[in-house]
Length: 417
Image (cartoon, rainbow, N blue to C red):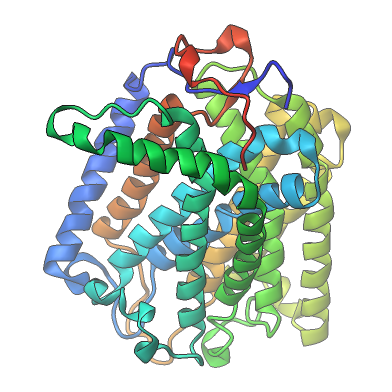
């Protein structure tokens, strides 16, 4: 991070614009659909049944959401574990994206749970089930989300430490909250590396375990996606999409907040992506070869078309594009390549949990209801709004002096994870 670029709230940008008002309206419709589901039940709000127990809420809101939030642990590992100091400028936005991503994954998961009010049960040792993959995923996500909020606390302390001023009767809590923020700011930063390491380990555990969910259903999975090494491929694809997600988020934020893109930094981390995608592709090809399913890749079926779209657009095309320096140094090239990787990973999760799955006794094909679509789109829009609010009020994005807001008191050069 340049000495002249420090994280600061972007106070000169208004929260509401024509675009954010449209996004807020869509988020509002999603919230109404979400409330309808909670009140009237999963059967009334979805097209799920005993044959198709999982729909887009699992494929998109949970599986894709968890994978696309991987930028937090990959960037933190690169900057803090491998000591690539120059990448600290993008760690905070990546951390925020991961924190919000996992938060909304949990919110989406609550909608998918039949008895959502029992979600707290895994916290009780008497209800643990060590043989369940979902139990491991749930515990890891729960702990990792806590770790993400702990990692984000120093940013909150940096912004409000010494400036807590609650109004009216709440002012009796000013000293208590300010003391707590001071402790977080001074002492938590000393141990932040431990939480970063814990976050990386927990991410690797549940990213891979998501790929284990369908391993127990070989007779219900299409051979193009069923594999005993699905956990490895899920982990590798999540790691590969981490940096493209950071690139995508950074470029979108730069355009939205009228900031100069961090092209040099983004171009630099983009060089890792072809290597990571290439390793994933090599494992994928080896898996297909060993399982002798190459004929299915070219049989012209619906499944083969979906598989080829996933591989060609989501893996091969980004490898070719990001292997060229001219593309990596171009904002349009970076955005296009990152978008393709994100599309490929999300499409893979949709294929694994929806396209590849065929129940033993299918009555009719699954298609999401309007409520399922509204909740999914609404959650995405709500995440965008919360991200915008936090960036406008907390020191997350590093900007040069010429592009900062007027709230100079919030500017701090303290580097936190």
